[in-house]
Amino acid sequence: MAAPTVTASLNSSTYAPGDPMTLTVTYGDPDTKTLTVTVVVTDAQGNSSAPAKVTAVIDPLTVTVTDDAGRTWTKLSDTGTVAVYRAVA
Image (tube, rainbow, N blue to C red; front, side, top):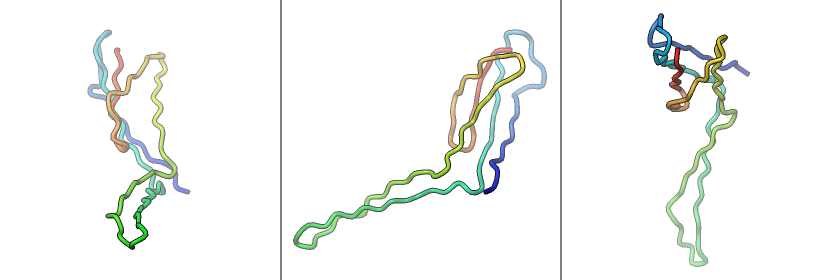
């Protein structure tokens, strides 16, 4: 199995105390699999519904953010490949 990948960047390289800090995390896993399930319903006369599809991710990823000052990082958004966090300097 391949290891997940991650890159991270802050919106600035320096902050004054109390400044908002925005962290952008881009992540992925080359061996994460998406499973698609297709469902068709057929009645006794042989009439069938249109296919309905639903997906699920096998081996989902979890992003954890900590720093050495003990700040609380709040997740603002997460698309499944890019997550944005905010903390106060």
